[in-house]
Image (cartoon, rainbow, N blue to C red; front, side, top):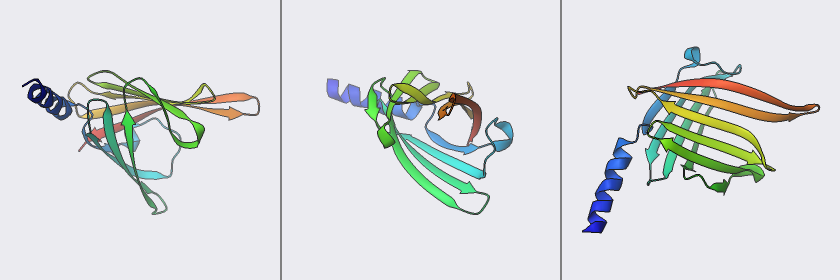
Length: 148
């Protein structure tokens, strides 16, 4: 009986996750670096209590299209990702997801996704830190998506 109850609770939790769905980039509502990006669609599904599957489809001004998929784990633990970096994902409450990437112990990227109270808008506050000849440069962006 306990297994059955746990299964029902996990299924309800996944279905109720505010970030699950298909999201479309709203360039005009976003404050981001100049981009060649025309559109971005992100589909997010939840695999289990701490893992979400992201499917990204991008279209650029020159007509190129790209497709990318990745699993992101939001349990507060470090996990190796591409090019010698580690990622830490946190899910502090029902409407917030935080993903941080580190290289050589220094944060190089942070994305804080917040779902609006009505569930229609996802705002991603992104901070990127890049090395320069004189130190580092920090770029902050606010990227807005609408639920489809």
